[in-house]
Image (cartoon, rainbow, N blue to C red; front, side, top):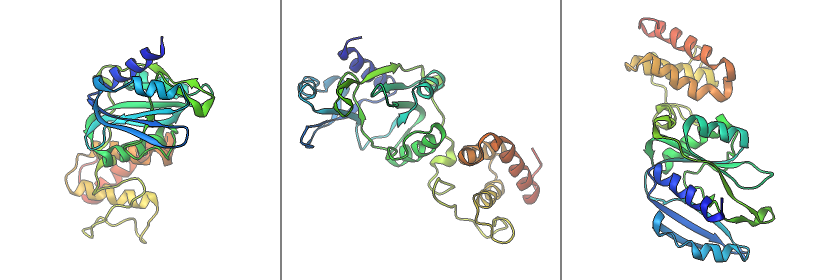
Length: 261
């Protein structure tokens, strides 16, 4: 593939994922950032960044700010992991240097604003061991088909193309719900019999126990609560997470007087 083919493949994948507008950024060798914001993908002025890139500028892109998009960004994902994710969920893996990992653009089942994308990317970064510093919801990634001058001028290339939306990743509601249990934030536990474990347990498992009780008392589907707990506790419990989640939900159902799963 020619360099321009890699660029076209990346933009085509974004279009297929529902992205219509992009912010294009060119970082000059002296550090100055030049922007083209909110441009339609078919109207990106690519001749300008190509000329700048040939003289040492870096070229970046992101879905335009201020819109909801169903495309998530992860940085520094191991090549074998990125390729596996693309096979399983669709998306786009972009190799930014021979020695480094990939930028991963991953389609999800619902459009998300920047806060939602940040929450989803934080969860995914833990799951796939991506860079936790690149989860802001509006992070720039490198545009394929250009040179990476931070890595001796190597080419930035597309490794995988978009797969149909039927395999797009579904982000568990608990990851996105700003009023519920979120990474880095404890839920607000009500006083109606949904307190953490006796003794005021403020450990992660104690907080999760209180949240599970509250969700079941509110009539939430136990199977969905179990799936959400798996999503939240995955990075902490590892291979034991399924057993832990089901056991926690079963105990909480007995506590709040609902039939066991």
